[in-house]
Length: 361
Ligand SMILES: [Zn+2]
Image (tube, rainbow, N blue to C red; front, side):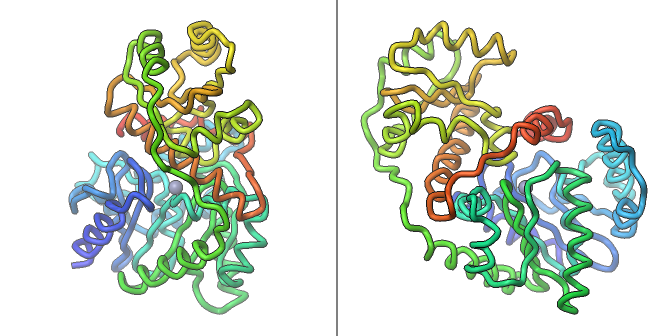
């Protein structure tokens, strides 16, 4: 059964923390005009057959032919409604992944979408597109950072058609700037081969590796933050964090988001606290400005701290921010850091679909 294969490879990649963190990434399989796609709010590591949503492909194709309003909120609400309408009878209690439309545009049977730190070192690097061609060859689609949801899907849909015309074969890889990678194949084995070849090609180009050698925790600072925040606080206590927090300039690379996942789990902007600053005052100013407490605190001379309402949340923040730190280092091998723009960051912060996802995880 195709769904059994889908569950198996989803769990396999989902359990690999170099490829998938928290609810990130998604998978799909197509058969006879239908597609089984990961449900929103599920995790690849533990997903079961029932958590995939069966959708009708022709209904998703209709979305690409339809005209939608220019207004972001109105357009996304209508598209979401049409996407929900693509669900087959009996699937109404599930919500297909926000990236369902991107799966549907591939002609191949299996599609795997991931946000690995190594790949995002490339997609968040200033030289991303040029270097991708040099390292991976010409046969892929590159998409510059843009609004997710309908806009991104439509750009990919159009580029897919261009690619087919140019090469007379379906495209099997999309690289999304400041986001991740989509790959597709007709067998699970071919999918795995493709992923491995991309990962090893990128690995061979990395000049500097992030240094996660453990260092002592700053217990006094953790205690102070716990007191102020009244929640769970943990530290990313490693050499790399020491390097990033030795002064404000070194820290600046961590103070803006790289990908939508960092926004969903860590919030868009970490709080930077300078050496002589009053910690309680800095936290209170941040909370007043944003309306919530910081999830990540980058403290000069102290380190990087991850905060949450409970231990589960602070650990998820930690996993995602370690990922951001890796990406920051990897970009050094791919032309230097390129953050998400402020405009795009605002769009994602306000996007209902992503707030749904963060609530589910
Ligand atoms: Zn994604």
